[in-house]
Length: 83
Image 1: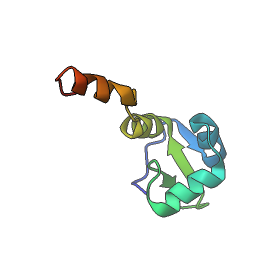
Image 2 (image 1 turned 60 degrees about the horizontal axis):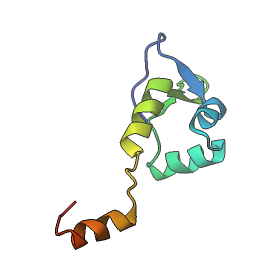
Image 3 (image 1 turned 45 degrees about the vertical axis):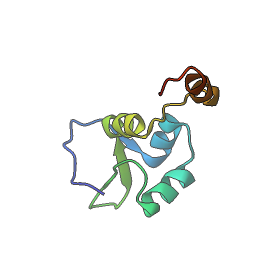
């Protein structure tokens, strides 16, 4: 959980954030409790959880995996190169 954002930030509810990420609200809950999900904000009045779209985009960028063809390493080895 992070500090409260300003009112000008685009805030998404948990269901909206889940839809944006292509996952379920339950998965966001699990990520939040495990400390592995995107940054979130808790409203101090109603205690609801909100996500900033900018934070979700940044989290997706940081979490992106670069996938390569496993045979690329074999081909490089056979050519005497390293990846």
